[in-house]
Length: 339
Image (cartoon, rainbow, N blue to C red; front, side):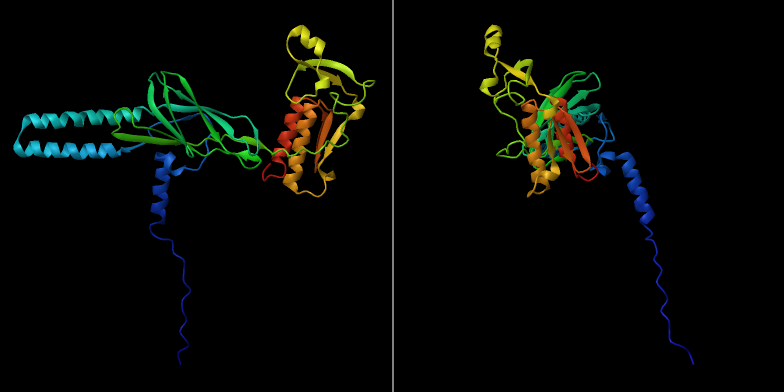
């Protein structure tokens, strides 16, 4: 007696077009890198070439093509040599225009992207440095970054700086979106474009707490560095900064120089202040970092000798602008993935 039929176990077969698709994608990745690497960041400098520039007829160019086809069709139909010459001459100019539109982007390089760190909530100002690598001027270059558009002309072998202002919302590393560079020069018949997606990052500091909370163990705010007059010593004079206490202004020295000067007092090292993350109670991570950011700014403004303590990290004690930058960098990258 025959046993029950057994259904054969299905075997996963690779689609016959899988290898063809992989080969096609590899060819596109090699020949058209800007198409397949749309979201891949590249190190600077980035130079545009024939593999990265795309060009298509514009709306006006399509209308022009239809009009020329109608003229040429009428000229051939009536065997009118004058009309035929009238139609072929603009066509030849259009072909030359296509080459000029492409060459307007060819050999254009993004050599630098400059931006200073800012606090969360403040706009970050990006400066894109574009340079013409050959001895040809560029006209009508359009740059689109998110929703902001700029237009620039670049001289022969010159470098143009294009600025963008972008909003920020949170601390950490800010990665600009790819910038789209395009042109329709000289006649607007063709539209050429490419993308520049650099690996540049800008550090965004935590938003300082508002209103500010007094510094822990804060010294007398009427003196630069705090303490009584018997312990502090005059270290130097510096230019007045809005917000400096009036009692710290050196009026006699200011009268002699004509510039408003402020006394900087030497603080004894025994009066070091420590800003400890773990000693701030009742706040979340971002709120604690926001308060520490405010304290770091106030301490540097008051010329305090301070240290910053985060879980597993300690900076200082020290003072000055360089110490302030180290502390702000640590606060900006604290507890971030990959930091």
